[in-house]
Each structure stands twice: as C-alpha cells, then as structure tokens.
Length: 216
Image 1 (cartoon, helix red, strand yellow):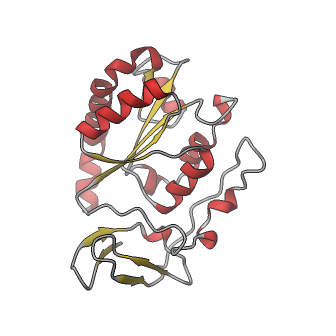
Image 2 (image 1 turned 90 degrees about the vertical axis):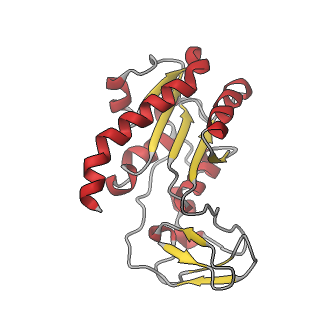
Image 3 (image 1 turned 30 degrees about the vertical axis):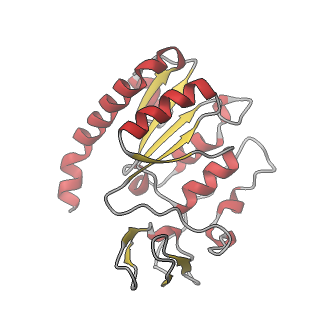
C-alpha cells in the first residue's frame, strides 16, 4: 500500500497485509510528526508457524497484537531497500553490515527470533540475511527459516534470502533450494559475502524479471 502524508507529502510503502483487517492503523509520519490514519485493507493474514521454543507462540506476532502507538512501523521511502540481518556473531555481523551499508540498504538487526519474526510480520524486507544458528540450539528447527518456508509465494518471491551456514558450501544451489533460500554463504567464506550476495541478487533479478514485467 502506497500512502502519502497529508502534511509534508512524503511517500511511504506499507504492505497491506500488515494493516489490521478491521481496525486499520494510525501512526506518526517520521518526517513531520503528522498523524496518519490508514483504512483496513481486504487481505488475508500471514500464516502462523511452529517454533522450536513452545513459549514463542506464533500468534504473538499476529496483527491482532500490534499497537501502533507502542511500536510504530519502520518506514522507508518508496525507493529505499530494506534488509533484516539475523546474525549474533560480532565478526560475521561486521562484514555483513559493512557490505549492506555500501549497497545502501536500510538495516534492521533483531536481538532474537521473537523480535525478527515480529519485524517480518510488519514489514516485507527486500533482503533477509540469517545465520542458521541464530538464537537456536538446533539450526534445523530455526523458526525464521520455517517462517520463510511457509510464507505465501506472492510475498516470498519479492524478497531475497541469504543463509549463513557452517555446514553447507557457499553457493550450494541444491541445498539453497531445500532450505528455501536464494543463496548460501559458508562462514569460512564470509570475506566473500559481498561478492556472493551481489551474484545471488543478480541471479534472482534475472529469474524474476520476465515474471515481474508481465505482472506490471
């Protein structure tokens, strides 16, 4: 959903499925502090997921629990690119953040899976970078990867997912397909993160170029 502030005329983009289906949403313009009201769209809710930790109830991240006054949307102007970085190793994160800053991404760094999933409920990120061991004892039951696997294809095809792994080879396309990500970077190759990411994004854009042009 594209919206415009009535006061300063700044334009912002908010996914329609993130707006409460009955109540809509009210928030403050990050530029001029004007109060903006958004009417509820006619959309379907994002599917729930099962997490490794049973205390992390997936419903907690649903639109029904969202309080716009308590935690406003993260805003990015229409031409901006957003990235969610789920990495807890400081050395790995430093390399990732430097590369994304150079590529002019607006970066969000969640502290844990709970925070990451909540961010993903309220914003469709252009890029997800996730370490398979992020906030979990078992990388095969990583809640964020499960969320990506079950995400509706209409939403999933509009984002690029990069998996940071200590188990799988860099650019292992078959394993990337199995994990529902676009590319894999092994932790031993983290210094090549920038190059691998650019290559993966180029492959993604080439693959979906005709589809997106047809959709437009």
